[in-house]
Image (tube, rainbow, N blue to C red; front, side, top):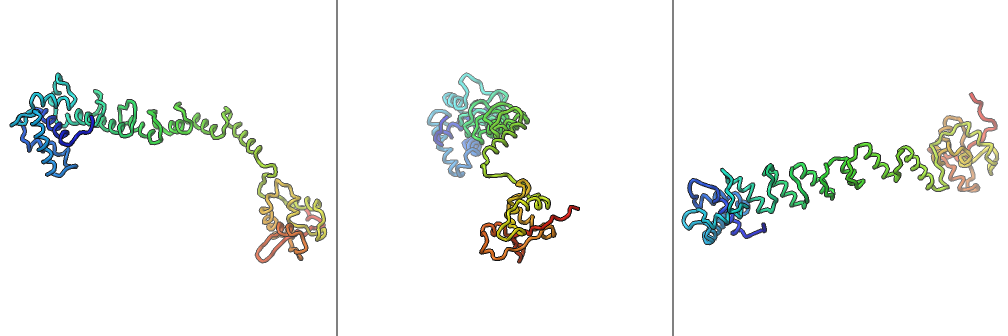
Length: 325
C-alpha cells in the first residue's frame, strides 16, 4: 500500500476503529483518545486534535459515517473492510479487538507485508517482514531463527539460508561451496587451498611445499644453522688456511670462519661472538691486528670483534692443538 496523506490515513484509521463493535457509538473525544497513541510521537496534542477533526470532517463528507453519531454507513463499512483487507462477504472474526485488528490486519497491509500464515505469531511476523523488507531478503522466512540466519549471511554479503555455523561460514566464504562439511574435511580443504595441492596425503603435500620452496631459493643462498662448531673443528680448519701477510701463526677471524663446516659455523655475525666466548674461556687466543692500514681492509672489517675497550681481528694459530682430555 503506497504512502498517503496524513488526513487520508487518519480517516482510514477512524473508520477501521469504528469496525469494532461497541455498546454505544463513541464520542469524537473518545475516538480521538483511542487513536492518539499512534500519532503523538509525530504531533503535539494540539496538532493531533486539529488533524483528527479535519480527518473526521473528511470522513463525514465522504459519507462513511453518519452525520450525528459516529456510526459507519454501508459505504463506510465497505471502505473500512477494504482498508483492513476483508471482503464485503467476510464476517469479522468473533470478539475482534482493536489491537488484534491493528496488529494482524491493518499494520501488515499499511507496510506492504505478506499476510501471516495460520500458525504465525503476529509479533514475530511483523519483525520478520519488516527486517526482510529493510534488508531486501528474498524467499520464504517463517521464523525468527531463520531470519537471523539470513541476516548474518547478509552481513557477509551472501544470500543464503544455510545454518549459520563457523563451518558453514568458512565453507562458503573461503571455499565458495554450499556443501555441508564436518570439521576434519573442512580443515583439510582449507589447508589444501593454502598449499595449492589437492593430494589426499596431507603429509606429502607439506613435503611437496618444502620442495617447491627449495626450488625457488636463490642458488647463492645456503641455509644455515646457529653456530655449533667445536674446538676440534677449529683445529681441523687451521691447516687448510693459507699463510697470510701476518705469517703462519696468525689468521684473520673471517678466514677461519670461511674454512669451518657451513652447517656448523652459522653466519659470520653469529660466529664472531661464539668465537669470543671461546677466547674468554681461554680455549683459543684472539689478538688485535696492528698497522691495519697496510692490510686488506675488508678482511680487517669482517674479522673485527669488539669487546668493550678491546678489539680483535686475528686468531693465534697454536703449533699443536690442546690435548684431548
